[in-house]
Amino acid sequence: MAKLYNLGRMTTVTTGTGTITLGAAVSGFLTFAQAGVADGDVVAYGIADGANSEVGTGTYAAAGTTLTRAVTRSTNANAAISLSGSAQVFVTPRKEDLISASESQSQNTVLAAPNGSAGAPTFRALVPADIPANTGITLLSTLTAGNSASLTDATDITSTYDFYMFALRDVRPVTNNAGLQMQYSSDGGATWLASYQSTIYGVVAALGATLKLETSGSGVMLSGANASLDGISNSANQGVNGVIYLHHPASLGVKHVTGQVAYSGGDGTQRLNVGTIGANTLANATAVNAVKFFMTSGNISSGEIKVYGIKTA
Image 1 (cartoon, rainbow, N blue to C red):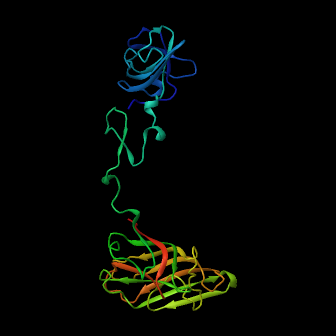
Image 2: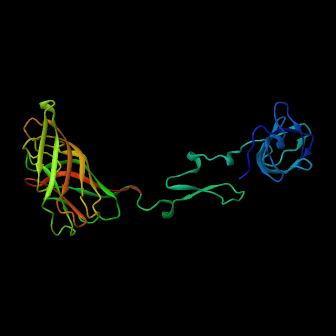
Image 3: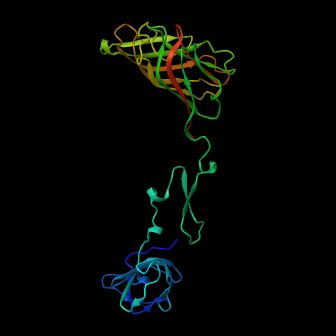
């Protein structure tokens, strides 16, 4: 890539289309040497000569003092203009020296440097090596309910990710006032762990600031189950929405679940319930490799749960 320097602008008495012999600095500007141009540097230049002009790249020679011309664009059909003997020559960026994302870059491309050469950088397609493996957040699957006894993911919960996020969208029961729960498995879903310490606490909007609390020892509570907080309304667009996290499922220690949800209660008035979730399993000796979502009564009528893996390092 041609080099750029500030304020370099000089006169020339050169005529014709050949190599330029540089003269003095234009008033208010610097010579190329004063601007920092070194012998042998390839610079992006411009020429202003009355009604004619030119931009290109040229090699600066301190002895002489001269500048060669490789024209990029000019008023002479992009060929070298014929100098009159009273032109000004200056260091200036060309379009080719600037990167325009809207013109040059497309989706899933990366700037490829010229590895120390004088060539201009270009954009190339991303390759797997450009992206550190499994960093950030990755959508792994979408669990979609349709009068389903449960929604199960026995494929994506592995040691690949540090923790998993479940995004719940309008998950609602067939049976009004049922509660949504989650269980883990350590054998790919063949059996489900049965002992938990699970709490959901929050408020029911119609009851003001009164704090409500429910607990369960048989699963992770993702809503109330009509014991303190309401269960879930089975009316359309009234199901559970929220984000749940399963932390370090591959560890041999405690597997915590945290999250927050909101949903309409099934009490007949469809009042808003907002809950904060905290849970772990009492069986910590093996890794978790599957999860199951189900209602405390009846099937899951509709809704979806997106499963994301999150890598923190």
